[in-house]
Image 1 (cartoon, rainbow, N blue to C red):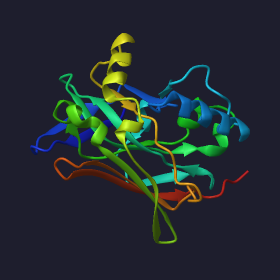
Image 2 (tube, rainbow, N blue to C red):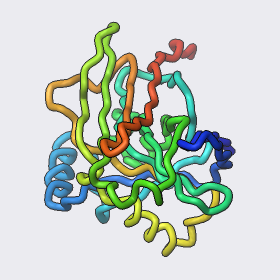
Image 3 (cartoon, rainbow, N blue to C red):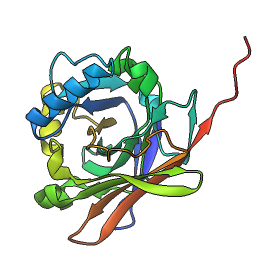
Image 4 (cartoon, helix red, strand yellow):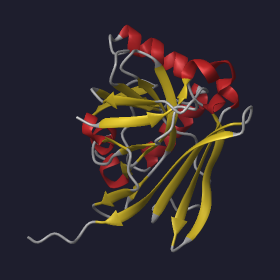
Length: 228
């Protein structure tokens, strides 16, 4: 399984051996907006979920702290998200994440597409208890890089998404709020007209109250052409 290491603001670290990796989907706070998004995706051939919000199990080894993501074709892209991480002692951590998804495969099944690329996580985290009282104020932003030029593609706050507390309750009800569980939040809207199929992604989770920012970034590297 994947072992992740997170540095906390006090300088201590937490090693997390990932046992369960779960990706939330259609997880906007406004389910009316979610319904509109489902309809938009249906026009692109992406099958609608049976229920919203959705929750997709992902292979634990796909939780990675990396600066490089290998892509099997040009139609893969990231999504700015937060991640809820259950540490070995049961402490809940919050960090930045980017769910790198196979958009071509998504048309055949969202769950399949989530298992075709990694969930990239930052190397720093906050204790959820330290920020939970102001979680809606936390900012979530993403930038894409094309031929060396960076463009913002996502900008919002955690108020747009279902809360870490909501998902902690869901995990608890499923018996999964246990050490080694990592849940990725689902994402906020992308800016219309910005090409998501990029050479690189950068995500920031910010706390305006303290000025602290958790960052991750990675390059998207094409795989070699197959033989046969």
